[in-house]
Structures are given as structure tokens and as C-alpha cells.
Image (cartoon, rainbow, N blue to C red; front, side, top):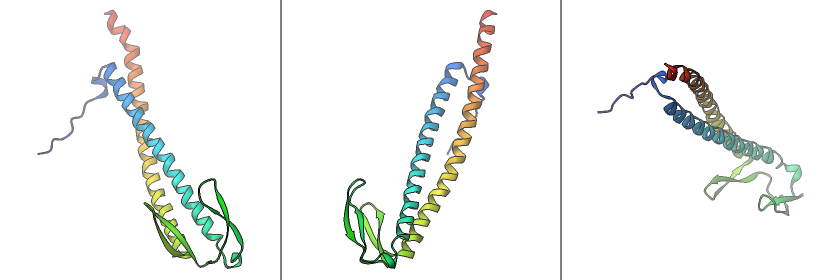
Length: 151
């Protein structure tokens, strides 16, 4: 049997409990924001791949180009096959695809990440709202604390 989560009003919590929840919400928000930034970077890389594929044109056949070996090391090479490209599909696997297939593959990746970014953005917004509400409740309790200790 699964139990239903118990709902507790923020007003019923003391200052230290509110501070703990605030800290937890801030950590979650930082993690989500970091994930959002990483997804944006991945999306930009896939868009860059689409741009690079569009540069593989028949008029560029046999032209000398710079081939990246690492992020900062390039070597000269000749473009011999303008109909196909090699696509990194992850975990060290590469697949030969036609240019249209490769563009479709990367557009699918961009769209998938966009969907995740939209969902994540919505979650971040809700977490921020919760944090703002919690902070205002915490400030209210802190302002009212001296009045209750005087009685």
C-alpha cells in the first residue's frame, strides 16, 4: 500500500525548518539552472553541426579544408566525398549518413533538447515561485519573532 504524501502548511513550520527548506530549494534551483545551461550548450553544438553539414557542398569537392582532431588541433585535408558525412551518434560510435539524413538527425536532436528545455524552464519557474513564497514567509516569521518573545 502506498501512502499519500502529507501536506504541511508553511505557516506551521518554525524558522529553522523554513531555513532548511529554503536551502534545499536553492540547491535544487542551482542544479536545474546548471542543467539548463548544459542543455543550451548541447543544443548549440547540434545547431553548429547542421551549419557545418551545409558547408559540405559539391563546389567544395577537392578543396583543402581544416579537419578538427581535437577542440584546438586542426590538420589540413581534402574534401573528397561531398554526398556523405560521418555522424557521431554517441559513446564512440560513428555512422555514415547522407547530408540530408545527417541534417534530419541533428534537427531531431535540436527539437528533442528544445522540448526538454521548455519543460525544464517551466520547472525552474515553479521552483523560483516556491522559493520566493518561502522567503517571504520566512521574513514574516523573522519580523514577528521579537513580538512573540516579548509576551
